[in-house]
Figure 1: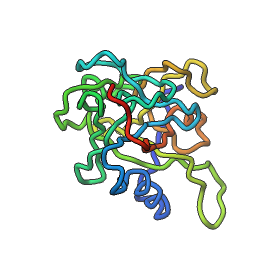
Figure 2: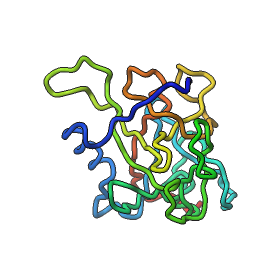
Figure 3: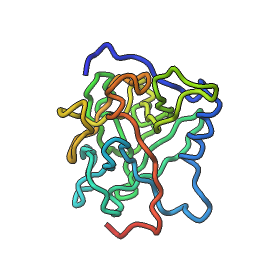
Figure 4: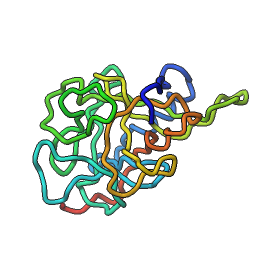
Length: 200
């Protein structure tokens, strides 16, 4: 990864993309207690925290899906197309440590305080183009920290391969589209679990 990577596809760019994001965050009436997996699309791994820990400062990493509450998060709309992302296991918020604006700053869980380093905006990762009359294909969701403008990213020493199990989550300068090959570390799906997760 280099520090020169810039850009972010926002919700306002494509009307069609708005529909995809809306679908990704809408909670069906019969699914209000299920939470969501934050799934990396290139690896099929999901965001996770250590099962026995409930402390502020715990790191978030990629793991295989195990259907426990430690892998489930609620998106809480705070207005202005911004969300808090709250762990169903601990009630703590997805947080960029220390309000850092640097590439590589770790993503942790912290007591929810509503600061901008705990607020996130959703966007769309698209194919690089040229695209047809219906625009470029949507490849998944991007999750951007409000305070820094940088994207939720999985650390990936095996790049350009998909990130590996155990990869810590961090923030990194956002890929513009899938023409920037590090998009694999920054593209997500927000999947419901049905039926509800177990007690852990």
